[in-house]
Length: 149
Image (cartoon, rainbow, N blue to C red; front, top):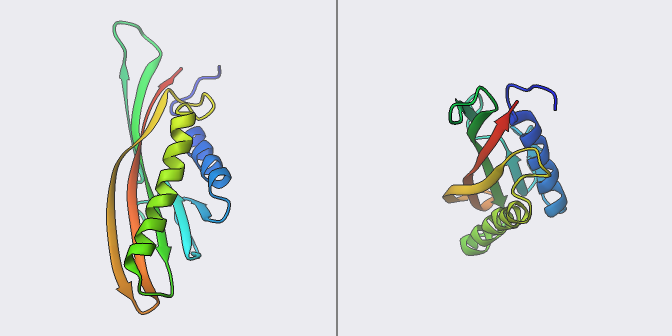
């Protein structure tokens, strides 16, 4: 295996691919979107341009010189904006997107072997009525454990 300082690039790519497969009717974006459809899932984006979406920590395991253990969290967003005022329906759709991705991660927590483990660990809901209708945004974090060589 070639030496790498971080698994972040490979994990982000694998997460985008998994979300795209699992949510074919949803706009899946790698990072910050330029334009947004009514249903959008952003992998590696906090909602604030320029704010870090991933921060990694590497440590040595036991007394070995390698591999290094890498641990990080990837911030993601699932957002739904509809031209209606039904907040409950929009909220359910946003959480359904997160649930589908969680199911993908449960089925293959290593993302095809690019990391040791992934898991959705936290989420926060923001909802509001806008001039375009009800909006729900679920900001969630995918925790990743991996090993670099």
